[in-house]
Length: 194
Image (cartoon, rainbow, N blue to C red; front, side, top):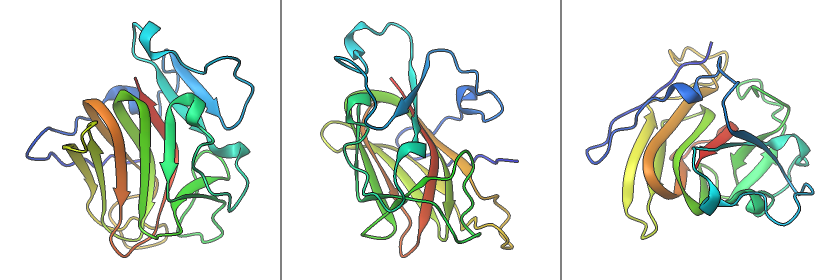
């Protein structure tokens, strides 16, 4: 069972959205984004979209210990300080496939920058510490935050399950940061909606 953890900020609330519920994978207009695939001219054309389109990154084609930065650029997202891993530590279980993202080489931090503004970002998170997800606009002004209040490692006494769904839903997100101060975390099922 996957739990959702959200915390309302003093600026904009983090709203739980049914389209991110894990038992409802039949999301309309969802694109499964593969790294370095043959996509033709352009993977997405934000100007022609009239309904929300969600893009869920397929991490399965990434090599273990591969630095992840521009592999999903054609899909509209660039990562910073991100590494693809296949966790061998059972405290960090994967959820959908073998590969997850981890903040590295600087531990405890990962950033995703979007080429076009998005309105929702979500991921399944397992962390050794409290984790804060922050969304920023084009000018790096904070739009909102959501928090995993404490560690949620597998086989621990945590009240929060591993792979907890964290989401931020606010207009005009240009970047999100994941920060677990002095900790390690993994992301699975990274998804964003235009």
